Image 1 (cartoon, rainbow, N blue to C red):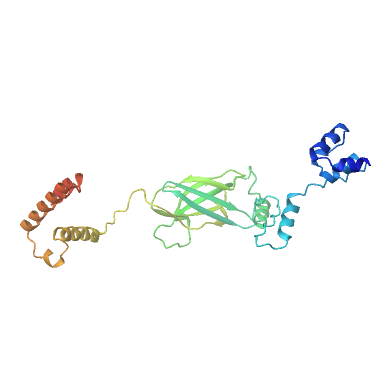
Image 2 (tube, rainbow, N blue to C red):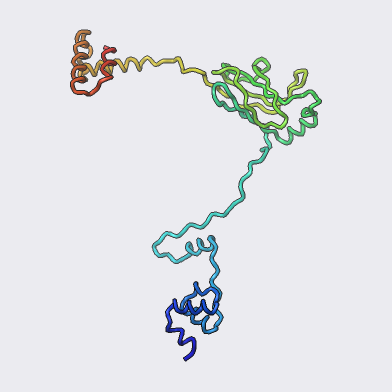
Length: 267
């Protein structure tokens, strides 16, 4: 009887013990037939290579349908998106943070930047400054800004592309111009912003009087037992008596406690 025949009758555990004694590599992952062949001296087939996650997904997705939902294909890994430093447009945007602060950012096209450099406006020794000119256009209907509407001029750093600044006054409509200002008052305009409405610092003083009438009417209806026809005929004495009955009923039933003082005060 050959060695292979004698090993065939052994259990998997016995075969693995023999393979361990003989120094057979990878015996712990071998099946019975592979162990028998290895102990008989036959070269064992190389273990299957582990499939990558992508291959595993594709294998499941392409398997014959058996009533189960296939696993989705993995999404390709893309390089992270990087926002460009410039979008190549002359644009200014102003945003309202709160009644006291505004935020502004801007962009300069290559053509405008070439013109700035050609004129030497960005030269620190030229006397030109990069500025934001704030216009107050409240009540103008968004008309063209002028020197008369300028309320603030802010110098910004040479490399800045955005700026926080304080609103001169709340409850106003502002527009921002970005450009270069010379020592003698000449202004090279790059772009104008949108209109920005700064809200007021306090609640609105506009009161809707109808709410008071509705509340009083609802209160009178509750005292009248919900009968609208009896409201107009109730006198002050009737209302007082109805309030007393209402309070007595509520207190005896424990329906309210603190609310009684409020209702009594209103009566």
